[in-house]
Image 1 (tube, rainbow, N blue to C red):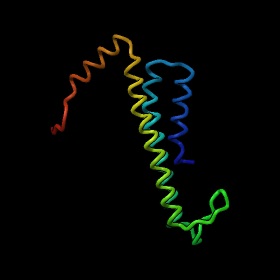
Image 2 (image 1 turned 90 degrees about the vertical axis):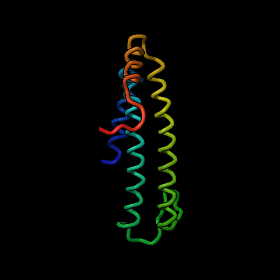
Image 3 (image 1 turned 180 degrees about the horizontal axis):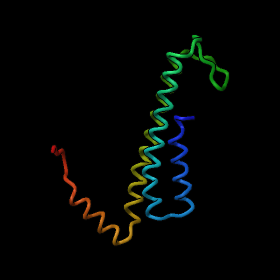
Image 4 (image 1 turned 90 degrees about the horizontal axis):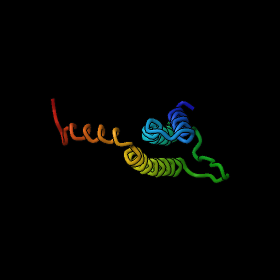
Length: 125
């Protein structure tokens, strides 16, 4: 449950956005996507850690009753976790574009000025 806490927080941010579509709630969609990706990857790595180090049986029983080896369970767990993380990373890009596209005029000017003042590339010091 601790590993799913960021996903629950992200769900709260998305519910706030659904109830009231403002610029602040749209900005939280970006954070919600980041939290979801973090939670998915943490859960995938926890599954792998648990099966490899803590699970004492040679085979793993899945939800549908199929027996699989530890190695195949770990591979599929990492595969599904990474696929879902990449899907949410796509939504991360979409939510950022959505946030920028629906800004009002004053917020857009302030955002453009902030982007101009940012240094591009690598800077040290």
